[in-house]
Image 1 (cartoon, helix red, strand yellow):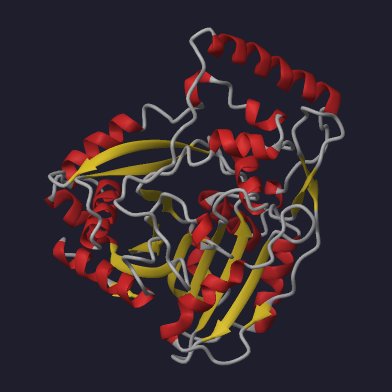
Image 2 (image 1 turned 45 degrees about the vertical axis):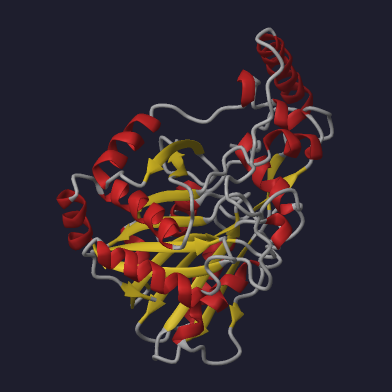
Length: 414
């Protein structure tokens, strides 16, 4: 696709300060030191790959922004000192700074030597460029040298034609929606008893690794699936942190791509989870939710957000997809990600991070979970966005391990 989608532009607005900043990150842990020459090869493959693009502004009002090739890349960032394993996520959380999907490189490859003799490699990209599944596709293509997955920037429809198409959709759709009455703006307000006013670090991270066989057995034992167990665990963690509401609302991203490609090809749906729910009942709730998707308020055409000024678009869409928790199941990662050249990975994680997050830009979301399967393991990445209740990464890690243990899951924390 050579034009930005509605979802792409939502993330572009967050990059510009309108909303919660967000970047995608893949992490690889190895038991030995990764060869610098190998990383240089990976870096070059990524530079020439599907993340090598940037946003270009249209010249005609109403036309969508477009993608243009961009071979500029940050040099490989290397940690200056040997990194204690206990600090690896603090280092990884800092690798999202400076990404610019419009005027500079929108991605960065970083590496650190760990004090256990291994390495940590990070690939971070702006969410404007890709969603979680797309990041895995991009890395898979680069590692395998798949030139068939390069972006096609040719045959771009003119800005005049695109603007005409967009305005036609918007005017017809808006007129139809207004016949049903003036739609209300979605509310992003939390139902919590107090607004969050955290100080210091706003987000804390934890990563747990669990044998897939154990995870699947636990899911079956509770009458659920691997996915419903994941959602139930994240909700339980939030309650265990002291969240007071009897019901937790969860937003669930849905992968809408029909073929492997690098973009933001996702929709959102939601479910409401009660304290009495189990992985079995969450399974039924999620199955029903996946049949319906969140849409623009009042039936307004979503393309409206692409033809009006950014601040208006932000005001109309602010918080629309945010709920108490986010549960993003990225799925099974490509087998190519299990190794970096001759180096076997002891762990691979995919998640989102929030560079430059301040208290004023905290979303409604309290806890975000990202699940992926790689080889014989499930990897659960967690990001707490509730500094008042979860005050440190250590507190989040302890909460996660304790909650997993209550489901009889044997986990290893990174």
